[in-house]
Amino acid sequence: MFVTDAQGVAADPIADNVERQALREAVRAIVRDVAPPERRLPLDLAEEFDDELHAHLAKLGALAIGAHADQGGEGNALDQLVVLEELAAGPTSMAVFMVVHYMGVQVLSVHGDADQRAAWLAPLAAGEAKVAFACTEAGGGTDIGRAMRTTARRDGDDWVITGEKCWISGAQRADFFVVLARTSDGTSIDGITMFLVPATASGIEVSEIPTVAVHGLDTNTVVFDEVRVSGASVVGEPDLGFRLVLEVLNRERLNAAAGAIGAGRAAVEYATRYVAEREAFGSTVGSFQAVQHRLVEAAVAVEAARGLLVRAACVEVAGGRADVLSSMAKLTASEAAVRATQTGMEVMGGAGFSVEHPMQQWWRDVRLWVFAPLNNDMVRNYLGEQALGLPRSF
Ligand SMILES: Cc1cc2nc3c(=O)[nH]c(=O)nc-3n(C[C@H](O)[C@H](O)[C@H](O)COP(=O)(O)OP(=O)(O)OC[C@H]3O[C@@H](n4cnc5c(N)ncnc54)[C@H](O)[C@@H]3O)c2cc1C
Image (cartoon, rainbow, N blue to C red; front, side):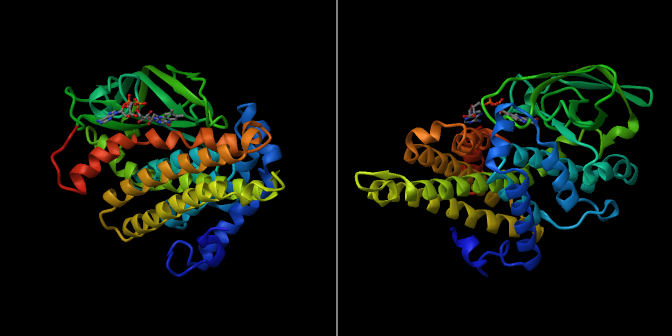
């Protein structure tokens, strides 16, 4: 068992909180009872969203964490991290879903006006509606501000949105989209506006992109063909929507790190249990030093990432500047998760290939967090500039 689990130590302010420990235990119990491997792995193979698990999370109140108090929100970023870690330690796709969900919750809670919160946030926080976040386009995800070709033009009091988004998680089941569209000429990040668009609006077409991982959540191209929305659907100020995305990205980095840590931790624990039982050469595989060293290195990498995440999250919650630490946490956690799941696959031998074991699912799924929400090369660029003070390299 990992340090955090074993002791609930005071050195970890995320763990050292009675209510948060209870939340962790509650999510763990839901995953254990509702989404054990024998139920969730067939769903993953069938590429189906787990509605039952989603309903249980709604009942627990996990979907309302971080929401504006008027919409029944309780808890903060630290509570979101706990939910994400425990989900990623099981059905990783639901953790990815929740990362997107919490982005929607944050945007609406912080920047939505009272009418928008009542209309969009209330059902979202109650689990009665789902949101998809439509930012990326085929022309470039990392440099999306410059690459964005989706436009919105004013027509009287309305806006008319035209363009194509790609890689949009959960678009098939979304009740509404948060859409970023260019509203002023140019390639700068200003001139982009954030809109709330009902999925039922005329002119929207969603088509699935087959992917290698995160099979419990659909990934899609979304076409907006002259989609008309009212002026009331603008979040924040026109032309300043990308600044809201940058703000959300900071929290998204923390949340992605928590997911990576959850899957990495689960991979080490699962592999450790497996090698402790598996026999070879008159002993167990877990008795071999080469196997132990690799598992230990993976465990240390995951715990090191957790240390960074805890620091970053505490700065974020205290209202300080968390961008450098959260970038470090996301970088370290995603690479630790890749290492842990790779080690898991190696030490499990042929069993790692079996779809009856969850290792292959974690191994596939954690790769998302290496390049999303921001790719790790770009994270290094950012840290070169912001943490080390070197010239901007991008
Ligand atoms: C399963 C899945 C779900 C997703 N969900 C969503 C979603 O819900 N909403 C949404 O808007 N988007 C979503 N995305 C998109 C995701 O955010 C982008 O894939 C990501 O931002 C990277 O963009 P890209 O794929 O265009 O990579 P590119 O920008 O083409 O970059 C490719 C690679 O080039 C390198 N690179 C790029 N720029 C630099 C640089 N400046 N310096 C050094 N190296 C660089 C990096 O190695 C990078 O990984 C999703 C993607 C996937 C695969």
